[in-house]
Amino acid sequence: MQVLIIEDEHRAAKRLQNLVQSIDSRASIIGTIDSVEDAVQWLQSHAAPDLIFMDIQLADGLSFDIFTQVDLQSPIIFTTAYDEYALQAFKVNSVDYLLKPIDEEELAQAIKKYQALQAPRMQYDKSIFENLLKNIRQQDAIKRFLVKSGQNFNYIQVEEI
Image (cartoon, rainbow, N blue to C red):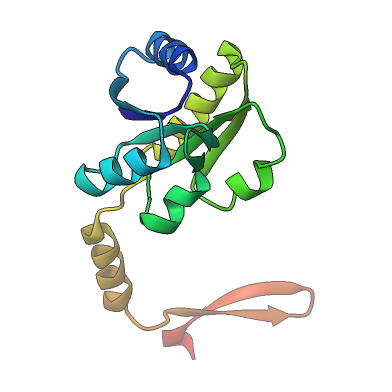
């Protein structure tokens, strides 16, 4: 899992990095960015990360400004000290909204939620459906009818009609 951290507080970014890697050892932190401008430049010049941890108030503005400049499709876990942006956060690719200081248990739950959303969906082999349709089409015409006779139901074979 490739993770990008967008956080302007160096200590918070380092702590988040350590927590993420302790929760999921497969997580690879591919960058730590501290401003809207740098985030836009990074996102325009690199492949989309699997997951982004994003603070809302950055050195040069609100992280929501990134969304107006970049078509960002990566899932995001917001990490912020402000609860008033929660509704706005869920209008973008938000998986979760964590308040600082980040609680390790809540972070683990957010990562599990992300992983559950990313789990491969059950894939169906097209040939299974094609064979099913073929078998249905090859079925002979109706061979019997269900007929009510008084209080009973009886099958009558087509040959008997």
